Structures are given as structure tokens and as C-alpha cells.
Image (cartoon, rainbow, N blue to C red; front, side, top):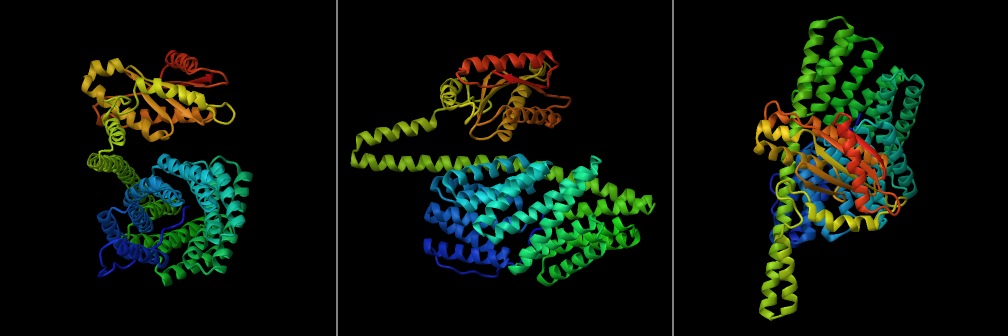
Length: 572
């Protein structure tokens, strides 16, 4: 249901430019112009040159701008993993520099993560963008962050929550009179209400399904009208393609075919290849709904042939699914089975690619963090040299203390790289001092690996250590940077979930439990199975951290007694 991506352009041939910061600024400006005109391959070439010059000049702002441009072009080209890599560098730089660009970059990271299937990472980035935008009152960035959060909830299978956030985005965009953000919200509202239609239809809820479809049609007509008024050819093609799908679902077949044929013509005229292929698939779907199976099969087979020369994997999967249903309805079971198998093969392949991309991005994140840390160390060392030469003893001692602090690992568990018991003792009292049950709710959870002694006894302590490292990595991915995660000792972990009411904390703990259970432990050791039990408590007014830890510990024992691999919770 999500909008297709813009097409790729022809690469630039030669782009000679002088060296220095002024050259980097010129390249960035040209890259921005290429983005506006849809020349994304040329934009990548320009942005990469700007990155090289900015890094050589060690200009933090130019490094951030160049990587932001690179990420934006990579996303438009469908190179989502490369977009994440560039976006992470840009976000880290913008965080140090401050400004609304950090929010824009986090929003771009959110949609890139989402396209890779990393929905939890996407929601974290979108939420971080919203928090930053709200804190600094960046109105436009608040609108876009709400939009991204809405898209994330749709991808997570919660169209109702998605529609709430997208309606907030739409309302604020209209207050700001920004047609681009209004159009983006309307198009995504159309998409998420299509998701809601399928959701309710699957549950045999015809009234709710009809209501969702009616809302989708209203959003779609508004989006098409706005795109036509503002002369935005790309967005007009995208929104018309989605509206054609909605009209088909509503049984308005003649208008659906007219809109979809017009969309194909526009996409061909402007070179929007992804939009064209997605729309031709929609035409096939409408023909299936009409019972015109032979025409649907012909249309979809032609589309599949065209897809052999493209990288539109999602559309290819949808076409195989549609061909399976069309052949099955026509009682041609042999080709139906072939397309069913092709669909599932692509689904497995995409899942494997997403898993590999996630692993590569974890390594890339560590590389970025280490590079930033190395840069900070180098800066401090250079500053120390300056201080030595000027004999500013007091300032030198302060910098030496800071450098030594970077080298110390006293607050980190060496095996899992999570916090250790000392970090709990230092940070937890401060976290409780800031907590407020109404304004800043706080929850504590304690997790324990089930039958971990059996893992060590059966597979050895080396495998046990690898299990602890893998579980720690899952915890890092599934929680926010603002949360405290620490290893209390052995196979026991503590979570301090700040600004988190109990129902949300319960959902987080359940996701942690499910993620550990679903992890491919066979890759760690054949026959290995790992689960966790969690005890969760909400901190009430005047509670101490020790009393809430005791409460969470008691709930953990309840989880163990009640069969393990579960979450037990209660207010403190």
C-alpha cells in the first residue's frame, strides 16, 4: 500500500570542481538541485564528492550536510541500507551541531529502516525526531515526525494507531499551510486506511471495513486534487495509483480502470518506472475482483516480464501473489502453485536479506560510534598538546581527567557491553529522583534467562557467553537509548524504562521476550533454545529504587513459577 519510490536517473559523466569548503558548499547546493529535479544518481555523485572534500577540511557542518544529501538520494534510489549508513553519520554530526536538520535526518532514517523491515529501529528514529522537534518547537519537523510515526505503526500492523498519528500530522500541516506535508499525510492516510480495510475484512467486520474504505476514498480524492493543483507530477501519479486501488476495492470498476490507466500513462511520460509497474499490478488486482481472470493473468504476466528488468522486489512479490489467486480462481492449479512457490521463495529471500542488512548495520553503527570516539580522543589529545605548550596546568589536568575517563570501563560489563552493577548503583537513584508517576512514569523490569545453567552444562561456557552477548544485543535493539539496561550478574538483567507507563512497558517486555524466543539460536549452537522470563513493576509516588527492584524481582519469581518464558507485572 505504501507509495512507490521515484525512478533512478542517468549518472553524471564528469563533475570537475575545485577543492576546499567553498567547493563542498557548491557541490551540496548542486546535489540539492539534483534532488529537486529527480536526478538522483547525479545527486549521489555530487554528494560523495562533497563528503570527501568536507572530511578533508574537517568541517563538521559540511560533513553533516553532505551525508544528509547522500542519504536522501540513496533513499529515493531504493538503496535503503546505504541510506541508513549515510543517515547515521549525518544524525551523529547534527546531534553535536544542533538544529532542525537532526530531526529531518532522523525522519529519513525512520523511513529507510522501515523499508528494510526494521520497524522497531524505524519507530525509535521517528520518536526521537518527534521528541527533538517538540523540545525545540520545530513545527515543520514535528509534522513530519508524526507522519513517520504513523507510517511505522502501519508497518507494525496497527492501522488504527497509525491513522491517529497521521491525522495529527495532517492537522498541523494544514495549520502551517504546507502543501507538501499535507499531501504526504493524505497519501499515507489513504494507504493506512487501506490496511485497516484488509484488517477488518479478515476479521469479518464488514461495517468497520466499509468505513475504512470510505475514509480511504475521501483521503485519496483530497490528495489527488491537491497534487493536481500544485502541479506535482510525481505525487499526482503516486496518489492516483493508490486511489485507483481504493476505487477497485469499493467496486467502482470503471472509474478505477480510468484512473489507473491515466496513472500508467503519466508514469510512462515522466519515467516513473516503479509507479508504472505498481499501477499495472493494481490493474490486475481490479480485474481479479471483477472475475475477469484471463485478462488479469495476461496483464500480470506482462507486468512480471517487465519486473525481470527492475529491482522492485515488493511489487514482484505482489504480482506473484495476484497471479496465484487469479490462476486458482480460474481453476488452473499447476501455474497457481508455481506462483505461490515463487511468492514464498521471494518472501524468504527478502527476510534473509533484511536479516543480513540488520547485521551489517549493527557493525556499521559500532564503526560510526568508534569513529566519533576516536575523533573525540584525537581532539582531546591535540588540545592537551596546546595546553602543554602554553603551560596552562589547571586546564590540562581537566582534559587529562576527561581523556582518562574515556578509557575507563568501570560502568560497563565487559562481556555484554551493557551497564554493570556499579552503573545501576550510580544511575538508578538519579533516575528515580527525576521520575513522577503522572508526568514522567517509570517502570523497572528484571529479566532472567530460563535454564541458563543447563545451557552452560550442555553446550559449554563459550556458547553461554555467546548467548549472553546475543541477548544483550537484542535488548539494545529493542529499547531506547534513554533507557538504562544493565547486567546485574550472571544471567540476570535490569531495565529502567523512563517516561514509560505500565501498559507500554508491558508491551516492551513482551517484545523483548518474543524477540529472544524467535532469535535463530541454532546458528549459535545446533539444538540450542533460549527463552527469558521477566518481572515488571511500575514506580509509584515515594517508592525507592530498592523497593521497586524487590517488586520486579518478586514478579520475576512469579514468572518462573508460572512456567517461564513469560512476563508478569504489577504496580509497585
